[in-house]
Image (cartoon, rainbow, N blue to C red):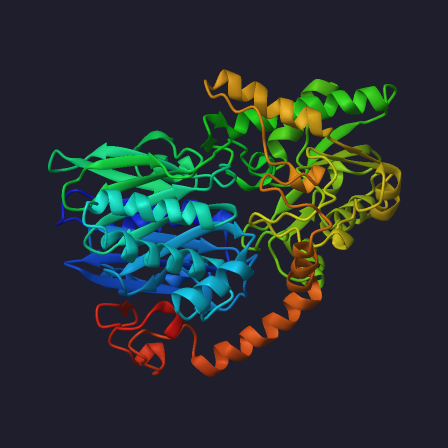
Amino acid sequence: MCGIIGLLLANRNEHVNQMLFDGLTVLQHRGQDAAGMVTAENLRLHLRKENGLVKDVFQAHHMMELRGHVGVGHVRYPTAGSSSCAEAQPLYTNYPYGICVAHNGNLTNTSELTKVIRDEVLRHVNTDSDSELLLNIFAEALVKANTMKDLNMTQAIFNAMTSVMTQCKGGFAGMYFINGVGLVGFRDPHGIRPMVFGTRTSSNGKTDFAMASESVAIDTLSFNLARDIKPGEAIFVDINTNEFHSQICAPATSCAPCIFEYVYFARPDSIMDGIPIYETRLKMGEKLAEKVMRKYPDHDIDVVIPIPDTARTSALQAAYRLGCPFREGFIKNRYIARTFIMPGQETRKKSVRLKLNTIKSEFAGRNILLVDDSIVRGTTAREIVQMARESGARKVYFSSAAPPIRYPNIYGIDIPTRHELIAFERDEEAVAEKLGCDWVVYQELSDLEDAVRECSTRGGAHVTSFDTSCFSGIYATGETIDDEYFSHLHTLRNDDAKQKREGTDEMGKNSHNGCESVSNDKRPEVNRVSSCESLSNDTDNVGNR
């Protein structure tokens, strides 16, 4: 899962660098592994990307060099490829025009696409990142479209996007910046990964455009939210004419947004597919409480305590529906990364007590209902239950606003292998025993879907189906759990494989002094005159660097 943002300002004397920085900052929850942005000024591209948080990657001297009225930004959370900063985005290829890509999601047919690019298109693929495949497929398709004399540039772009939609399988959303041409936003044919765009009146009376993974970035930058990009749609903003174009480029589409966005990933102040995230989480808490009352009508819950931060909204409504006090029992250290996103089981386990501390008076002598947004591997939940007991809780009950996660996610969320999931081949009683709590209650999948649907109706949207694959094992793009793809996914994403890659990535960092500059300058950054990458003199494809 990643966060992306693109901006095109009508006034060429204005600069997008600070707005990209602010937009990436409010999208930081979508990825904390790496950050990057590319801007364009008078056809010269300026790129800065590195492992780390937005505030650390972009220092004042970087921002001074990231000039231009158009640009693309990205925050990365790795599910495909490695954590190497070589795979930080945006990625770039010089031909044709100079194209940059920022991508959120995951392609499921990478093996086939890699063979096509290497053996038929004769482009070099230098990383394991599926974003590089998206970049090269579009670039090659645009080259071919430009040879068709009856197509103008807008038609050529949509022709190339049709090729991308036809060849690429999975859940993905992204944007291409074509130097001197414009900004292209797109969303996969099933609408699994989110993407919105907004507009505002420019200082010269024309229109400024913004695209982003979540509406919160549009709001923060004082743009007006226009709408979500539709499944299978591509939108194109012409940098020369300031004109907006859109077209459905997929031969067949359906709307099945990832329901885990509503459960966990999206910020509560965002709106996705016309559905307010905050309202869906309130509704999830209400339905979770109703299940608790159905299963335990004579419950002895004294107090409801959320696991910060995502579960707070659901816990508040659950407490209200149960008629129990709502209390904050855990204080979160906000300078620790989200443990679900942390690679490696041991890393996650060690970080829990650094991330959370208890207010012991809220636990002492009470029967506690803990509410979390979901339970994935169970590492965090197990530690939290133990912390509650150590703080004097008489009984500890645990509830999840999401159903049991029993299947891997293949569309960009790091739920890698069934055997690492605590709910794999376990019912609620077995999970409770594993966590060390008195009982566990999970949300019903039908209730979760209804919670989002009901808010969809109030928001004026008409979303009726969702990708629920990590709960149901039913994948929008047609994969089945017995496919060879899942065996391959396990070898790439299990914790042991990740730890081995991290060791390799760390060696790469030491030997290459961080991200390699396009100008091939290996001097330490503190001695460089410029630490941003100027791409105007780069004559190689991204794969040749």
